[in-house]
Amino acid sequence: MYTNLAKVSDSYSGHRRHVPKSQARAWYGYTEPVTRTTDASASYAVTLTINDLASDWFKSWAAKWAHDTAHLSSMSSRTQHPAYKQIVGLGTIAIPLLLGDLAEGQESWFAALREITGEDPVTDHMRGKFNEMRSAWIEWARKKNITPRNVRRNPLP
Image (tube, rainbow, N blue to C red; front, side, top):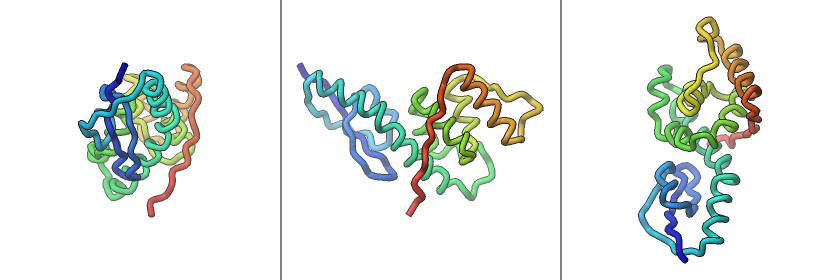
């Protein structure tokens, strides 16, 4: 039996991967070519892609987003960047990565976390206070038993 896989590539690093067509639309570089593979290897490819490569994709997209939007002061403009949309497109897989990056004080991922989770633990009096907002999200994760994954981004060349 055969499964349709789509070739995807990360726009920043150029790495090419094969993922199920149904999931490929969430990533840059989606193309239509189909590769045939057995069910066993397709299952392995899905597991490998989701569990092992999400962190690499996140690091790449986060670095691209930070670099390309560093000059923008408007968060609404920054959230329109394609790399940001790719990160949000990862869905719940991105939550521990976003929280890990947030815990390290790298970026303010509050909008992405709200968009993915549909929740906002930040109260009105915390708005605009990065440390309080970060603490609220870290506490939210603790209550949900979500462990932030530490992600060290590679600097752009």
